[in-house]
Amino acid sequence: MRGYRRSSGHLAHRALRSVTPRLIVATVIMSGLTFVSPLNHAGAVSIPTFANESGQKIMSAAMTAARVQGSCTSSSATTISGQAYASVTNSSATTGQQSLRLGNAKSVVRVVGGVVYIDDDGAAIQAQFGVSAPNDANKWIAIPSTNSNFVRFNSGILLASLLNEVAPGGTLRTTKTSTMQHKLVVGVTGKPNIHLGLASGTETVYVAATLPHVPVELVATDAVQGQRETFVFTFTNWGKNFHVTKPAASIPISATKLPN
View 1: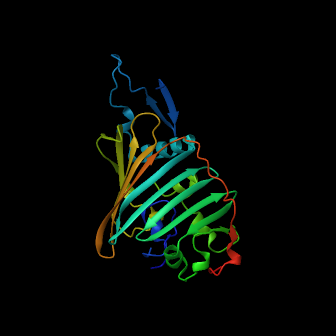
View 2: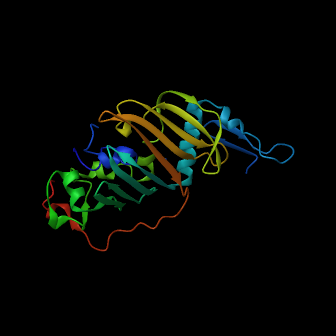
View 3: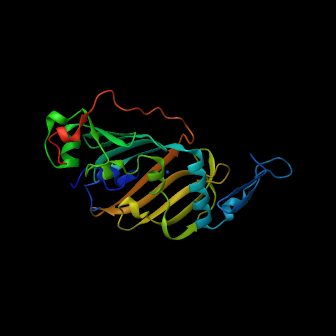
């Protein structure tokens, strides 16, 4: 395994950073689009014109709405190469926390004040750093921005970085509207976001068709170690004020036996 976290932070292979080669108003103007109120003359909710826009415009509006909300929770639970995988990330503009589990490896990452703090068990340390360091397990370890490990652990935790991994690439097409998490959504399908670490496959981001037009769910598929895998991430708690603080006690990574 190349490691427990991948070069990207938020999406499915984040847990595999080193395992595989590796988010009722009458009128609102957003990202150059004008969306009319979804209320018809009888007061009932109609299908909004938003769902009929191009995939590019829908994703642009979704990213704008997400940035305006300022925070969200992204979560996933699946199986990767026969191992149970779960992640929950609370992201805001300047702080964030992510909890990961892959098989028997557990990791928690916080970003506060421009510093990354990790709390790994022994299995996660072995997977992430390629060394056995039992004395450094289950302790908060501080990684400053000047450390070579900072970038890979910092990615996908803060909201801007998380959103950088959401939009699909290539030629975009849209789906019919459907209901997801009790919301009317429209899907935008393309190639997997370049930051997901997926070699091929497809990605669909489902966007709320009514205000605010935030991402609701992301579904990506790819072949992993010869098997077709599907990764599903849900986005909730938009605009919530998360209380993420610096750990009460931590050890500088330079004082550990971990590679620097």
